Length: 394
Image (cartoon, rainbow, N blue to C red):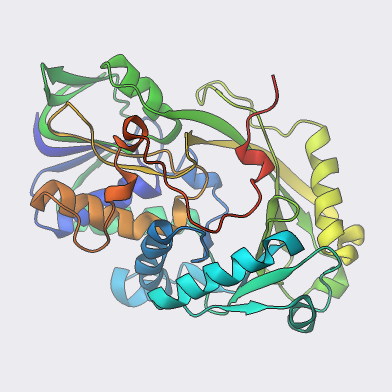
């Protein structure tokens, strides 16, 4: 079998790339997924749709992606996938100045956001404990989406444009001859291709290592719990990224809230990792949740799970042509933050492959070679490091 482009990985990034390639007129696009679509990180993503970042590169990708979520029915001919709740990023007093600078940066891009004082935040969400908060960024248009429905929409529209989506077809090896990719091997045979895109999430480091391409990224576990909200919080709250506590909260339907539990379990094997939460995680998650929303003391644990993603050395995505291997492209290591930028990533990767450069958003800062060059991505006004982004002390 021969393809023009093989996309490895059937999550939100891979299906977005397949959709964008097929939309750009690439005739023979083949997406290969080792199990079912969205069975890896995407299926367990909390799917936040927000634009707040401390670096302009990610913010531009999020801003370029937002209209597709907002206008999904018109653009993708499917049921709505996005729920607008409003979004808050909260920081401690020591980061209040940085947040205000970042809000100005985001407003310069065109994003509708404003900095709030703790008192203004309390007016907006009266049930929030603001005692340890120095400032908040508010995005009224943001919210969350359904990850499975987004992946299904990309699949449906990619196939409608001629792409082949092959589930239960693992890539056992990427094939290269000297300095060029030549295709992939699968259990059902070889597929020759002039271009291969690795969008395989936590499996990407292994695939790249096997062909002699070191990837500055490692798979890491992600812990999440869901609670049933008490009656006094029946109205869904906003999506909150809490830089003080190092976590996030978002509503799920009209009765549940999702809470992230900081996790420092690195170098997991995505094929064998247990998916249940360790006993300590719900306890810690409850402490964080009730510290920010005191009324959640009357919430009930609904369920919890452990997922995973691929984290790069600077906690930002790796996007672009692989150095030294013609025809190999990387779209991986989104570090737990890839869902909201997936539409623009798909478009930009398709432009890079078909035209030689991304036009819609400049993704050159995400190039794989940045680590060797010592040009890591970092905004000028960072917040205190998130605990789940740090490696535990040895």
